[in-house]
Length: 85
Image (cartoon, rainbow, N blue to C red; front, side, top):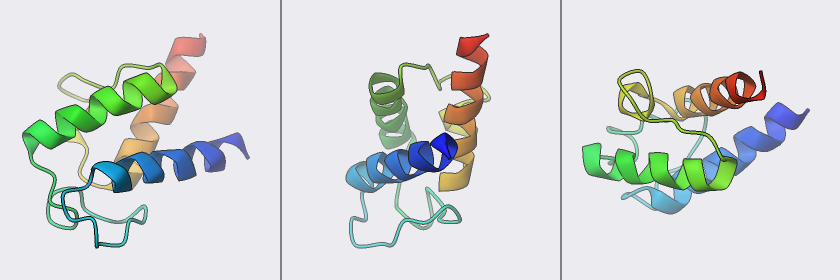
């Protein structure tokens, strides 16, 4: 249940930072093609997620590798789980 709340919060963060603010944001939405994220905006997204959730999502396998909103959700959830260990 908590994972669903986190997913909703992440979707809100992604939607707020999306260059194409009129596009619908769902787990399947593509960050680049669907929402217009470029590399700089994805870094900004990573920083916003770090502030909001307290976990780093940068690096080679982090936010730069995320293609969809679901990828971002999985990344944050995985990192939060790792940080709890």
